[in-house]
Length: 145
Image (cartoon, rainbow, N blue to C red):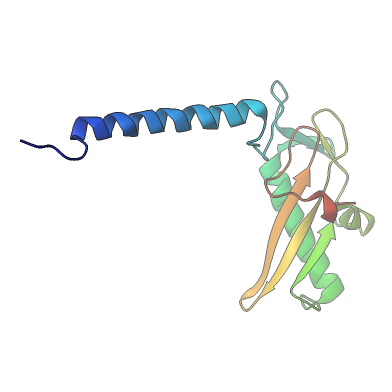
């Protein structure tokens, strides 16, 4: 009997070798720092913030930023602005009295912004926070100054 091609066992061995190689590659990229976790939390530091003397977690702060931005956009633009997107920085919210200074658990000042997108169905708000112990996934330094 003349066999041409691979046997099932041979194909499974090749598949297993490829999977193991991919696992090593992903691990190696992580060790080299080429695969980054943008929602970075510093080990040994509690992922919390201090706002007006209260300790809260980051998700609560991001939700609070959205609420403050909604009030700001309504008061300043009446929910109608030119273009499809505006950036509202935390500093703008603080200076306008909509937000207080945000500090992380190391008592360092946090910065950030909220992107507001105009859609056919209303406004969408996306908060981005940058602290010494945490950074929101998708944060872009160019929008925060």
